[in-house]
Length: 58
Ligand SMILES: [Zn+2]
Image 1 (cartoon, rainbow, N blue to C red):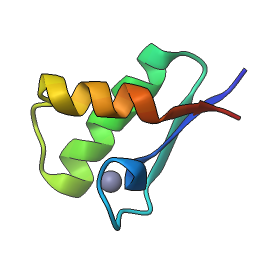
Image 2: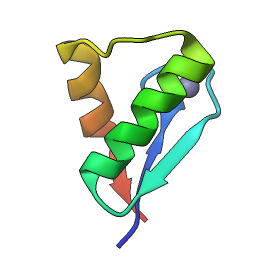
Image 3: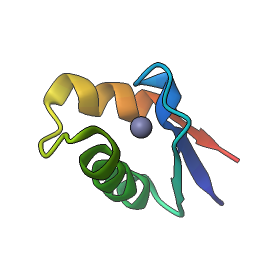
């Protein structure tokens, strides 16, 4: 099973996509993407919920 998170569902206009085998892997990759692409060094609770809600099975 592969899980995918399209950053654009949370950050409009971003075409970044991260994936992983588990939600934890996807969230780790998303945190890395957020830091590198958006300068977000901390994911707040609301953003985390939005990211989790945007994870899709592919
Ligand atoms: Zn992004």
